[in-house]
Length: 341
Image 1 (spheres, rainbow, N blue to C red):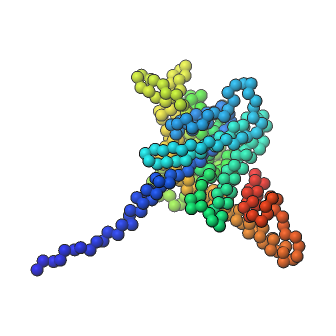
Image 2: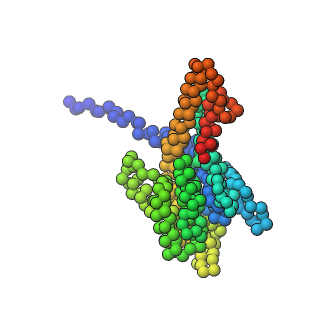
Image 3: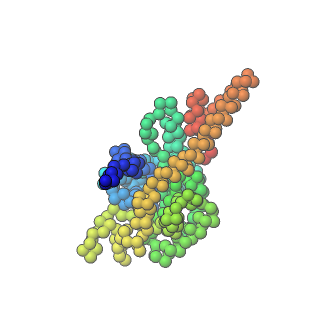
């Protein structure tokens, strides 16, 4: 008598969760928010347009010498919908025209920090609503491209001050703008000097080291840290060289191909931001920077309520918040971080 056929199905099927997540992700898309910080003339708009291979933003710098110089740092967000191979991204690029353009740049970083914290506060407000949205619109800044002037001898006092403040609230990626203004030897020496100064001032940059990193992640992140700051050249111009079309810049002494790794770190920067660490940028923003902000604000709410309860028990007047709607805790949360800048 032959043995009965084994009809027992051992396959459960939970391994399909990645496919399920992918279908939902493709349907919903995601948000990516990048802020550009640097003085005028550093090629911020050109670089970001080059990274995303699309003309997303126009330059906010002065186009003529007679144009009035901005007296304050402005915040200029532009949002575009992009799609690649069925993946949709709502991309917001935030330019900061006027940053660092004055003789006295004291406090020029305040509007930048305020904008980043305001996005945290707006997300927290939506998160704490009794009837909150199923999918909260994410305007939190996921990455900051900080542009270093290739004409400086290193980090200026302004750079040190701003980098320290920015790294507390967002993921900062420093880039040496218009690196084709230097020779290869000058670029190498400048990068080494900047790296030493960043270490000296204990400026912690993304990607951050973590005990949870796998071995391959540690190796990848170590290679990225070796490249920081990225010496980049951006260009939206397509030129022909020896019968081939390239994206680059033409000089009297030759042509810069932005995709040539011997000419520029552009490819490394793009791959880092979009191909290897895009998910990490979004995740670290939520789990590190936003969580620190959220914890701080909820602690302030708790302290305020304790003060109000103590005042009510003693029959005295409750403490009055500084904004118009003291009954709404989120108003206090939006105000407090601004006073700390």
